[in-house]
Length: 86
Image (cartoon, rainbow, N blue to C red):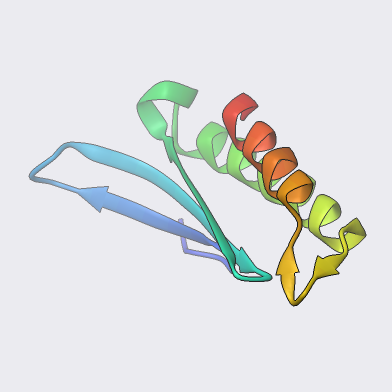
């Protein structure tokens, strides 16, 4: 499987981690979450979970407003909840 925009495939032999990393930056904030193949039941399922979370985050960020060039605290909390439940 090949990496995509905002989604990177990670395979670490020495730590036994295999999965996807979601990373997106907007308005001075960076959001990152790892989706392990082991936790989600395989590479395709972890990718699907990461893509779903990314779509939800992008929708939230597209609707948000910047306050003095940065994301509001409310938006940051909303994205945090999306990542916690993913």
